[in-house]
Every structure is written in C-alpha cells, then in structure tokens.
Length: 137
Image (cartoon, rainbow, N blue to C red; front, side, top):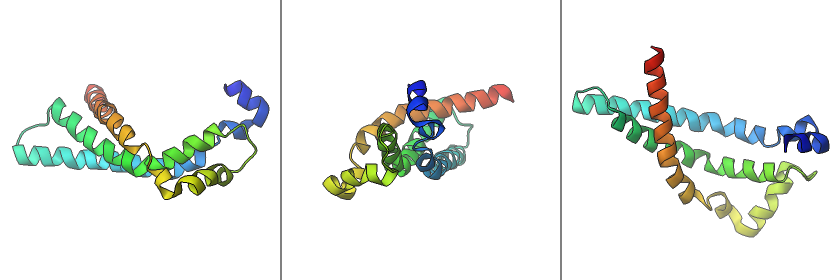
C-alpha cells in the first residue's frame, strides 16, 4: 500500500491526515495520562494503600475513554482524509460532503462503539505501561 501511495502521490501522500492527527492527539493523550494519574492518586488517598493492577486498569480505562471522546471528531476526520488520499482533493473538500449531508452529527456518529472498544484497549495499555515502568525501575 505504501509503495502504491508513494508512486501516485509521493512523500506527501504518506503523510496525508498527519496534521489533523498532530493537532489533537497530544491533547487526548495528555488528558488520558493526566486523568489516569489523578485517578490513581485519588485511589491511594481514599483507600490508604498502593494501587493494584485492577485499580490501574479501571483508572486507565476511564481516563482513556475520556481521551478518546475528546479526540473522536479529529480521528474521524483524519480517517476520511486518509481514505480519500488517492484523490487530488484538499482535506476540506474531502470532508465537506459529509458535513453537507449529515451536519455536525457526522463528527459524533459511531462514537459509542469506539468508546466501548476503548475501555479494554486503554485499560490494558495503562497496565502494560505501568508494568514496564516498574520493570525498568
């Protein structure tokens, strides 16, 4: 796929949608890890004990789902821009028909399924991150 994109669009084609991703992903990841750390601190304060893997999973899942909710509209736009990479249209030209036919609701359609998927994904990611951090230390 990369070779085909390279031939038809050059280097720019490989980075289509990168600007959309780069503008909002850092915010979502900051919210995810910040909210996770806040949640783990609350658990330690409330129960006066070290956090368990279960605590880390729950805090990671809740905070990660919040991060996905914040990033969902940008991620959806990025996916459409990347899918339309074979055309010579600009990013706005690729998105305009979706907004014209569905309005602003277009940005949120499919969010529930994504948030459901994010629960195990983000919870497991935080547990793996925490375990790797402990192993390195």
